[in-house]
Length: 411
Picture (spheres, rainbow, N blue to C red):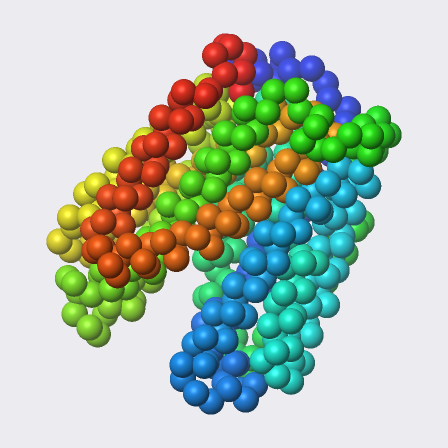
């Protein structure tokens, strides 16, 4: 009998999660399609900004950055609110709201008449959207606890795959159906996600959870706040460290690749880490369910820190691609494990609110990382970015090891 079979036999029945596998499949498909729709504009965003009347090259770059970042800026503020409302009124309702809001926002982007309207719609997408993050909350709370990290790993793989596929589709569709047609098609696809979410996801109602969520705030209801604080910190640190490399990759690659191939190789380097994470997320999540989430988080952070050292001294593109792929494998299971630890460390009535805070902390790291990486790379040197990021991840590993629960039964 396998270990997994013994788990399934020993695990008590959890009636509140009777539909967890169907929910996981719908959330996986929905998260993939919504992430694709959000990221497909990357290749043609400057062209669309120019089409909307911006002619100066510097202004085009500036407005493109503002339009792209607006979504994440807005989402960072409202993620805890949507998580809290999900605790009270139901997590499925938040997914229905997000998919409908994104259907409207992305479709309207194809009808924008000025760059201000585009930025406003990108802000609205961040405020009203959040399907992928909402899916993480629903899957975390509806999946049996002994399968939670594996399920979250599968969902994370779908989200990361959407981030990879989105720009590819965004590069292929506009020449065929036009930029505005691409937005309208993306909105139509998300509308099907809205229908699937509305009619196929089943969330068991919990009057006790709703009453508890209304009676006490998410944070006040947690008796031991240390695991939640640790995971909020690790989530921020992870995204900050991961994104700090992005601004310098193209310049770094240019040191040992001729000019004609710099952008292509840089794209491969960026994709290598994402591909590694896609391949490892579900496997590391399953491993964490067996040996402990804290252990996997600590080892993954330490391994990624070690892999950053040789990245600072590579002499060829293939060395960097290989090391980034291995680093992606190491980091792939971190977000599912962070989510699983929070889920297992807080009351069900507070899970959505605290997971919303976790998502916000990751968005903060996602914004701060490129800013810090660009500053350090420009003023100190590009090797300093890799080595500085190594130190941050090593500190995270030590911090996680130090604050891990000492009990054998802890997640």
